[in-house]
Length: 495
Image (cartoon, rainbow, N blue to C red; front, top):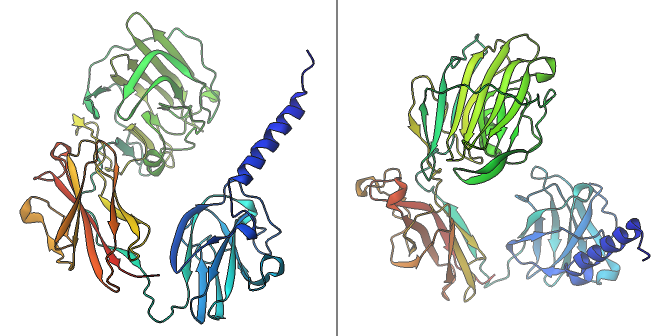
């Protein structure tokens, strides 16, 4: 049977996908421009868009279009501040339609990498088109912020956050940071620790372990390399996830998920917190291409797998480092050190564990501060909005960072902000930001976010002060089990 050549087939598929993507973006061209009004509009995306014609600034492309009709005469500014990528923005006088656009200005960077264009004066009824693209055709999400003239009798609806949510507990990551600047400080040679799963975290404690002598061949890791998947032979459950494979970095740590980042060239705390799940026995600048070996062994009978570094030198030295990871099918993980020597003052060491994307609990001394138990981080409760409080128009009040076992929550509403400390009620660090004349209840049901619908009453210029509360005694965050969010000031308007 004759087959379509792969290159032609690939081209056909790509063309089909491209045409589908374009069809899914109604405002890919001027004639499909989406209306925007005073205030923030969005979020939107330019993913999958084409370039209508060359933007005169930022070598911009991948543009999408928006239309604004001025309700009164006065100055106009449209910006993309706070957007998620490097944007480009051009405004046009569109009074003569899409076929006769006149550029009013183009901008690449104004607020950081985001764009802003101002027009000294527009007249009532003027049509302005905004073309949003990306620097060098980058794509991403963005908000179109409009600050234009206001007609008599019009009130801009606003939603303004104020204050802070309480309780911000860093409990998921555990690590020790060895600062080598003032000389060798690594002190865990010839010791061992174990990570025992508790259901929500690890119990981390010293242990007496038996060294496993590897029998496998050297993995052949070079400098600053990550191994291919190392199959454990079982599913390893860890706080926040599970895996059947691990990935060893030549720089002394092991990823719980596929990742090519080798962590060159020293233990770095911000990366530890921001990146994926990993165990760190000796995250430092190691160089197995200069000596020593790295092994992966499995023992199916006993349900254990090992990653072992044998006399691997610190980069630029002959300092040998020997240590081992033992992964058990029970979920227990052990880190075992034999002799380890780090001397370069610019090589800093991290030992510990992180599930990734966590708050910073600070370094602890593994020699004296164990045992220690980890738990999921408890981040500040945040109340935000989707939509604005326009009279009679539904919007949502969104509560995020809800703890997994929360029973219920509520959004309180009132007409004043009492700014009342809640420490006497067993909520240390929390503040009451609304007088609670009414409440909107919600059930999180294990979700980290929950939304309630709010419809603004017909009362222009009225301000309604809102705040979220969540009850979760199991989280152990406050004495009475409740936490509070920031406040959100809803200014009722008709524009």
